[in-house]
Amino acid sequence: MPTITVNDVDIYYEVTGQGAPLVLLHEYATDMRAWESQVRFFSRFYQVIRFNNRGYPPSTVPTDTGAYLHDRLIEDIDGLLDGLGIKQAHLVGIATGGNLALNFALRRPEKVLGLVVVGAGAGTSNRQAWLQAATDLADGIASGGVQAVVDSVSTAPQRIALKHKAPLTWAMFLELMSELDPVGAEHVMRTTLTSRAPITDLEKALRDCQLPILVMIGDQDTPAEEACRFIAKQAPHAGLAVLPNCGHTLNLEEPAMFNQLVADFLVAVSAGRWGTWTKD
Image (cartoon, rainbow, N blue to C red; front, side, top):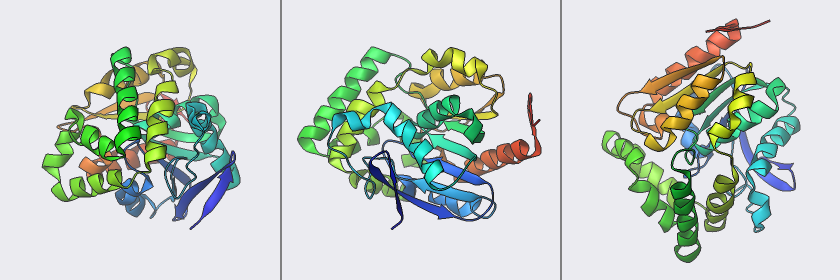
């Protein structure tokens, strides 16, 4: 079981394939196993790196609240790349992972080849209500364990599309949620997600960003809609893909469509021709 020590925690990771590095960052409700379809597809052409964030076993699950600040998880990406000897990589992040990937790219653009941000930015719209809901869920996890996560996420409107489209994938999704560590799940919800800035606070950094960016969102993913459109509007070399009849978990809902859109983006970046962005 490969782990690497980063910022005083052990990060569990896997490397599959050869080629340009492609790092996959998972969402809150699952771990890196949710990327299986993407690993199988992209490892034919890329060196695919996926890992579990702190708080997600086998990675370390700290008990200190301060260990879960959003900035700490951003720093983990930097440490992981350094520890693996990777100078530059493509980043693909969904939801919480998309927010982490975006913030990392804005801080360390020299380490990023191309950036894919998927369904990120919940908590940007209706922020106070969202913060209260996050606190309530964290309290529910503290008192009732990860079943509180399953109950909340499985009934969210932006998740229902997956349930109806792919019952077997939905069952796997529920199983992954049920295996979350309750301490990690509580702290990530209570601290990581609430300590991150709303996407609209990143306006200047986005306008200054010269990276090629693909933003993806499902047309039923209301909590992330404003944030994703904001990223695509502000960043000068960002394109927006809206997937029809899709909710929050695009890589599980529509893996073939998801993989093709990301693959086309990566090829365009490698060729130095992504919209208004060109390679020097």
